Length: 75
Image 1 (cartoon, one colour):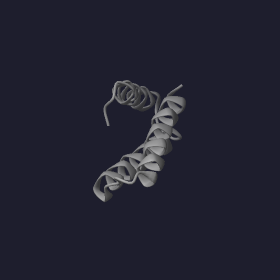
Image 2 (image 1 turned 90 degrees about the horizontal axis):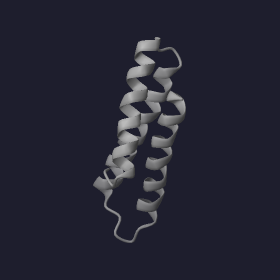
Image 3 (image 1 turned 45 degrees about the vertical axis):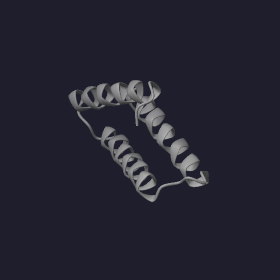
Image 4 (image 1 turned 135 degrees about the vertical axis):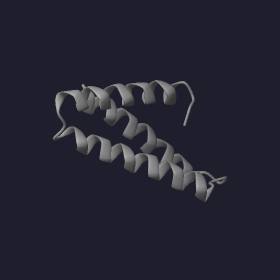
């Protein structure tokens, strides 16, 4: 469950990065921010591999909230 939620957030950022790169109004600072957030999510998913159950629960809750925010139009 936790890795799926993190994966959904990673996919969201991946889609936004692709869209930003294709956009005629692409802004380098916006692209840099998206890439940094994408990389942070990848590190979060990597932490899940060796995390204790409490840490897995914390990461899962963090990314579930982030996904909800992103789906609501946040960034």
